[in-house]
Length: 186
Image (cartoon, rainbow, N blue to C red; front, side):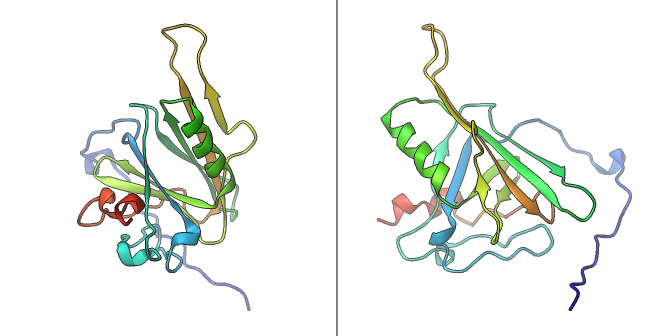
């Protein structure tokens, strides 16, 4: 049986209707979650997921918070071609190169994760029930710098594909994202 779907209606997109600031970049916090920790897969309505709650996670599980370098987080998307969906990319930077960041990088490189990052008054979620977010070769790079004034950082850049939409949003829970941290459930 062929799958049927209704394409979104095309509407006017006028500058006069977009009276808002257009600041580049995303918030400093990136929240990650292990898809295996979800009580049930998340289901989007068009390109919006319902908000997460403690009940969204298995007992004792939740989000993990990464405080990242200011002005270093970004989300991009691009078409994979007609009827092939989109590729999403998430970039963020940790300001630490040490044993803890190396351990975290290994976990991020090998687990099946979803990500949430604040974009002004909204939140982007990079997640798909069926497809994995992956860091390709070179997608996680640590650098101690060479000179005293160089930054020590771990740069992370991963992709999720294919997705139906290039951007998905999720409303913040009433208590904010920090209310769902796994570290608060111990």
